[in-house]
Length: 487
Image (cartoon, rainbow, N blue to C red):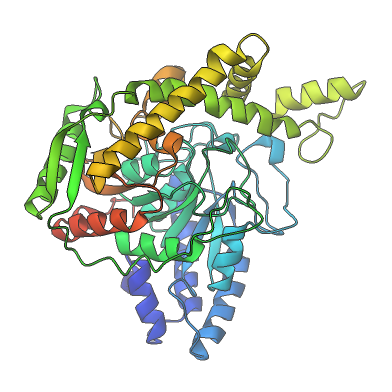
């Protein structure tokens, strides 16, 4: 596979377009790579080599007719929280271990229309609840940069698979940082789109007012190409916003002179690792060198409350969404029960893992009589304040930049027994989901040999600004070209 190593989506597209390589050859090479590396990385819950080869053959026929789109014939991987017709979709939970959806998610329909080649379904934290990918019911995924460390969560398998070179792009979902955190930990570009920009039809729900599907790739250009394919209105999703999807690569000119960028001080949290802080500050200085007008005195004073708001709202929505797993309709059912109530109790006891049960209980408590006003209602009011602060900032600035995470990827098991320390990993990413705005994490250097991410935020539906700034920074640095030794 030497000549196909380290390809980007854009490069692979050109090779396919010029007929210098076939999708069948490309896919075969990546299947070999998956077979070689999976025992080390453990990124995939389900491999779909046979499906991938069938899709590659159809892609080659399509290319022969001159019908080629940016993702036609290019191997990708899908987070196992996104429904795929006829292919197991587990959410990395025993509850859905043998669930085979009868329909495709909207993003899968869009990818199939573009000629996708699906290599498999990516491992994740169970029901997307976690920051390390150690909450999978099956096995933990490992970081290709250091297999003793976590890849981040919950979309850890999606990130690790691309970082290891098992696919050229992947899809994840982001409820509180689940795309951006793994992107930071694995030296990738990861986009959390504006809430409502990508259809959630066929995305297994965790927290419905926060969830959003987005892409991982190795470059900003590749991320924009994937996003251009999956974005757009879908009437089957009541939260989908009817704004025409754009060609998000049209803004990639590398010129950010005069753009106003704010740096909110609240994101440089106490306890941030010095190496991470230095890498982020160096990245901000680079943006200034490129001609951006940087203001380091920005304040978003309600940011410190975002963590508490999130861990009231997200578990509350999870409590409601996960009530459907009752041993009656579909999924796992506890076999040896006397009556319906015992079936329900035992199914949930043995079907859900400890983190999922923890969040269901937190949410049920926050929604219960006597506590609803004190917790859930108050959290919604603080959410409104956080949204207003972002709106005020975007009246003055084109974008805000922050660290993606306060730390580099940590050792496996290091935070597993301390939920609060695990939750604090997402302290820089949570506010974005609370406000529903778009944000991207891009490679911004290294600390102790591990990747560091820079997070860029923009106003709703202004993903183009994220791509424009991210691309300019990427062209002026070479962090995105660094590959893990494993790959």
